[in-house]
Image 1: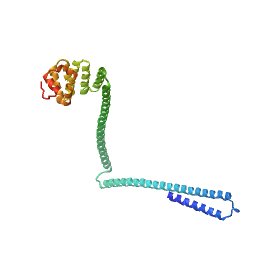
Image 2: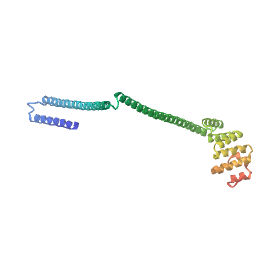
Image 3: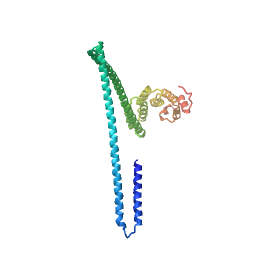
Image 4: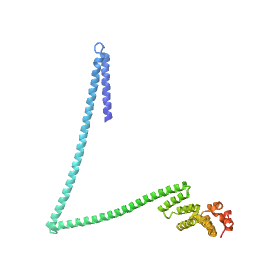
Amino acid sequence: MKQFDFRLVMLIVILAFSSLRAGAAETPKADIDEPLYKPFIERYILDELKLLRQDLQFMRTEMTNKVAEARLEATDRAVRYTTDTVNNIFFIITGAASILVLLGWRSLREVRETVTSQVERQVSEMTLEYEKRLNELETKLVVRSEQIISAQEKISETNQVHSLWMRAGLESNHHEQISIYDQILEINQNDVEALTYKADSLLELGEARWALSLANQALEQDEEYALAYWQRACAAASLGRLEPAVRDIEMAIMKSPSLRDEVADEKAFKDLVGLPAFDQLAEGDSSATV
């Protein structure tokens, strides 16, 4: 509609302008001078455009009023329909109650009491049902909230532990490494890797007995962790417990065969050199036994 009106307006303006220019061309310049009639053409075009805009504004206002009236009429119909429906239901109930009273089946008071009791019973049942549902929903929300909080705490702890492991990997001072491992163990006291790496740092500081205790704690938490057997073997070798050290080396290699390549280069095993079982392990003979 708007595109059609705009094109119509432009067509009228172009035709009017062309007609005025044609008339101006046929009239001698001696009779009408261009500065005399050009302002009248512009004024005429502006007046026509103004009238067209006013007409469009009027049409828009009229359309808005019609739409508002239509909506108001629809709302009025809906309200009237609802009122009529409620009135009809009320008349039906009143008529039924009157018939019951006239027939002597029940009095109006009994009908009212019966209706009241039925309504109260249904309302009570609905209330109990909704209370039950609300309690179940509340319980689920509490459980879900606890799960979310627990998950957030675990994520926070995981991020913190990851950050501490990054620091430990960059730290060259063994005392500082032990301090970092202690912080990890404060977050998770059963962290097998932290116990094992702390034992390794203690071995570097000459604390073989402490390292042996930590390695035992790690193995109590996870008997399949090969590096814990390796660290316990290092601690046992440092304390002169040669045969238990060799057994732990065998267990470590059994759990992680890649450790076999590091047996000969481990400086903690220097006291084991010469033992047949250790020499066989160092040479790569997997059939060695103690």
